[in-house]
Amino acid sequence: MQYTTYLFDFDGTLVDSMPAYIHAMLKILDDNHIRYGDDIIKTITPLGTKGTVAYYKKLGVPLSEDEILERMGRYAYDAYAHTIPAKENVKEVLRKLKENGADLNVLTASPHITLDICLKRLGLYDFFTNVWSSDDFGMSKANPEIYVKAAEKLGKPIESILFLDDNFNADKTAKSAGMKVCGVYDKSSEEYMDEIKAVTDYYIYNFSELLTLKEKN
Image 1 (cartoon, rainbow, N blue to C red):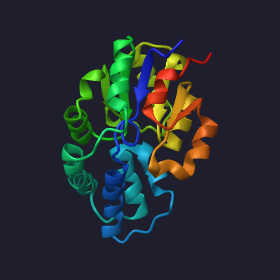
Image 2: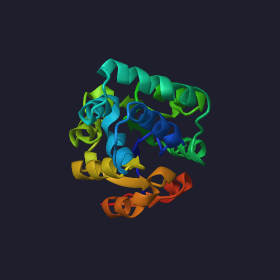
Image 3: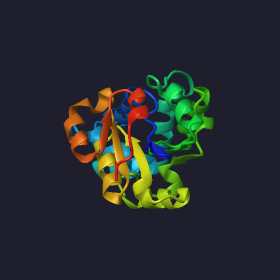
Image 4: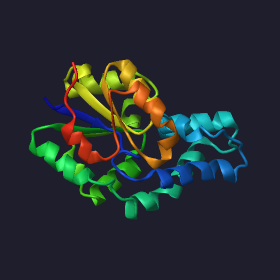
């Protein structure tokens, strides 16, 4: 039996946006001569915009929170609005799942200013019952409670929902909250592939594989 309720990440899962996202996020640190570790993207991706701003302040970025937010949006907006593509087979698979009666939803750390315009441009927005930014919950995807709250809003047992994400920390946290989890291959998280596989129920390299996944007890 296939899953009937899906919760998708956005960046690196539905769309090939991680190069643009990484460029925007690191440019803020580089412009302000802030040193950071090799795992910076793995760390900040689940945090959402507000969480990343707080993390950047701890790293010593000498800008106000509003200034950091403004630069995040400005650096990334054009790419989301005009050039970022959907990942291979995403649109076809979403259409097939929808035709089969699945309930499709998005939960991402990205803000609505880039999330909505990108999904609408790519013709993906209308496939989803809910398109949520972590900002809508007032907490990041690094907090297990966000997955509990999402399940409550969906009105489904948390263990019946399949969550898909390319980020190790988000996958691990969703699994700890009780969701079934499918890791998604993305070039940006390739070095963490084995870690992701170790904490997830499934792992896919191409979206077409999603059509063959069977629900686990």
